[in-house]
Image (cartoon, rainbow, N blue to C red; front, side, top):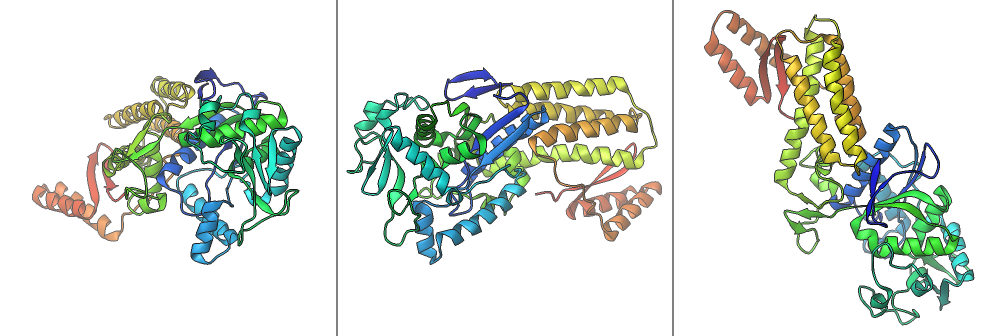
Length: 467
């Protein structure tokens, strides 16, 4: 498998540190609100990477953190008259509701910053001892210039940063590019005891400390959104490698940005949407499917029109599954055609090749749709190649879609007694050659949300009410 490594700016063969095992850290949410559609992209994409690695035989230890203490959380708590801990508890629960509905697997470990204060303090102490950090009036800062390779991930020049480019100036810093590891307590803020007085951790240090605690000093994969390359991931590298004297992460993966109707998403522009908002109009699985239609490193545009296209495309896969289930129920043709199965397996090969090429989910979906078309073709034959063949085709479709985390809804029979009665009446009218009445019933069922399909194996009823 080849992955594009942001650190080296090229595709590289993926070779984990330990054969058969992968350690992976992905930046999780700051839990002060429901997560938005931009957050959803890395959650979904790197869930797919994890699934594919597991599919190919790796044991993946996947860590995704919760940032449960920072300025935004303190502001939210003050606005609502609640504690920061209450805010965190509520939105962590809401994260899991949305994430699971999106088909995102729970992390192997989901650490919270506030549960790892000791590990954070220990890392900061190590940095001070080695001369990479300094204390000023209860605050502790990392000295960016002390780390010779600072800027190697983002390409930023330390001199430009020290001149004040893209960083805020704090009088207590020795240099403008330095960043906070520990923040002294301000009135009314939550705080923990430390060697430098009461305070709380900075944002960047928490990920270094938790990755080190749960995955080791050097990990295989670190992932996140493109917006995290600088300063967050750059600072993670600096403080982790300075503390441990070892490479922090061997492969750095970043997904591209999302635009909304071709405009940058922002609250001021009025185009800021949470996944919870969008799920009121579209099924969570449609949102997940949409995210897989473009290569993860490419920008992706989000719009109602594109969601409708994703919905329609996903329904085509469900209709193929329904076609196979209908065939099982109505055909007496047993047997297996190995020649047909061999033809179908070529799409599995194409799927794997796409996924091994830097997680190209767009081409992987293309292979699935070729498989769908082939399956629909063989089922529509006057003499299909037997239930054994279709059963294997069903298993193959489930296998490949399972890697992407789609086609997860159970088959539901939404046909009630009224609909069944109309179908029987239509069949009787057709037998009596009363085609006018048969057409009237078809139109009525269509208005009720059911499409009637006359197949070589009987009448198939398709619900059109999928969201």
